[in-house]
Length: 121
Figure 1 (tube, rainbow, N blue to C red):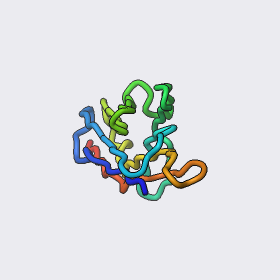
Figure 2 (tube, one colour):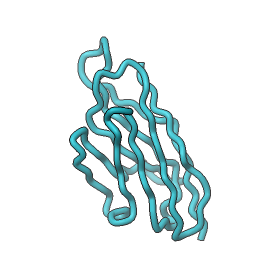
Figure 3 (cartoon, rainbow, N blue to C red):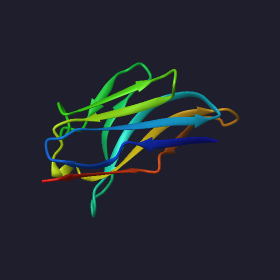
Figure 4 (tube, one colour):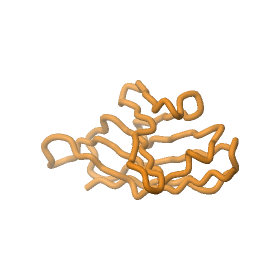
């Protein structure tokens, strides 16, 4: 199957920066969209940023101008550079990928285990 492994979460002061990374492995034929979601305590999971295989991106309004999503198609990785962090960015961040997997018809949505980002004021 396919696995997504995240890294890079942690504690940072407001105004600081963090970089999240996510690596996909397994029987991957191709990866369509790759996304970052987040879920804060007592809130629903929300889409933070997305990037297509061609490099087109979109962002939640709350992170535009501060976060940058990028991917390396050759390495099946996606990253999220987070600058000017705010306490309200505190959440568990999840990597998501829409994949085509050997032996499976259609797309398979895969999720990472989550990375905790805590921004102190």
